[in-house]
Image 1: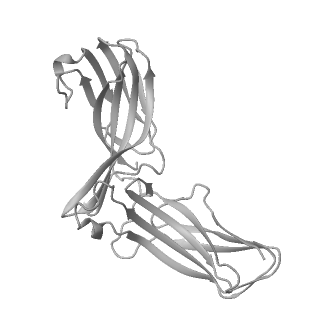
Image 2: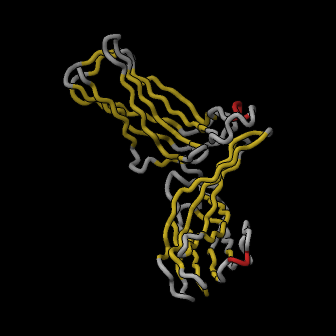
Image 3: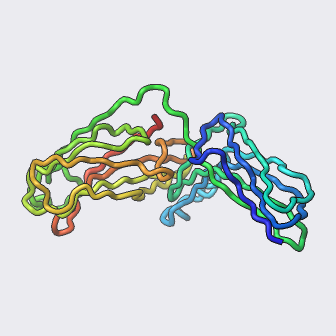
Amino acid sequence: MSVTLDIRLKRANKVYHEGESVAGIIVLSCKETVQHHGISLSMDGMVNLQLSSKSVGVIEAFYKSVKPIPLISCNIEVAKAGKIPGGKTEIPFEFPLTTKGNKTLYETYHGVFVNIQYTLRCDLKRSLLAKDLSRNCEFIVHSQPQKAKVAATPINFTITPDTLQNIRERSLLPKFLIRGHLDSTTCIISQPLTGEVVVDCSDVPIKSIELQLVRVETCGCAEGYARDATEIQNIQIAEGDVCRGLPIPIYMVFPRLFTCPTLETTNFKVEFEVNVVIVLHDDHLITENFPLKLCRG
């Protein structure tokens, strides 16, 4: 006897803020009456930390600090043991999105080594012969916008062979002069990163100019930290040997879920950087790195 179980939230975008109520309906569909041993619904918010392979075994203290960090957890009984009538049954529910004690609801974030996730789980218990049913549904938590106006922090940059770091033989580098600016390194996450880059001169042809968004995730404790940088997205803003002196616009939208406001706690940190990458014709890379501070405006 088949029963289908679904969780539907009232908000189509599934975005909630602390203090609001997560509301929706549980939808049960079956052709004929079905016996059950109770229906329950739970809401959980969790930070899952993971160590990169290079960090495992280096510091034993890590194993204590990478345990999941619970943010919110509550459970309600939706229906006592009984019968579900044939057809479609809708059961409304509502959970207040408030924490106990001094815990903070961090913003939803899907990273590589840090994962902040909020889920609803509905369980329908059945007799031994029939399999229990369960359904998960993720919802998204956004932190409250900053009360103070976010001040822009523009930055100008000039890239020449002399400004590059980690270079062994500087004398062998071709001559080039690349200028530009970012309108602000303090960014509102819902607005794009903007600026421009200008190639004033280059002795060798340019193959491509790219923007690389990087997340820097740190897990650990007082005894030590594992810090890992991974690419989120790479956008090509120019292809081929670009005209000299021509301003090329920088425009990057921050992807949902893979970015969040810059976060620093005792057990983990989530930070962001952007690289302006110039690829020369022989595939040599010239990279300029800028730390970003993301916030919810």
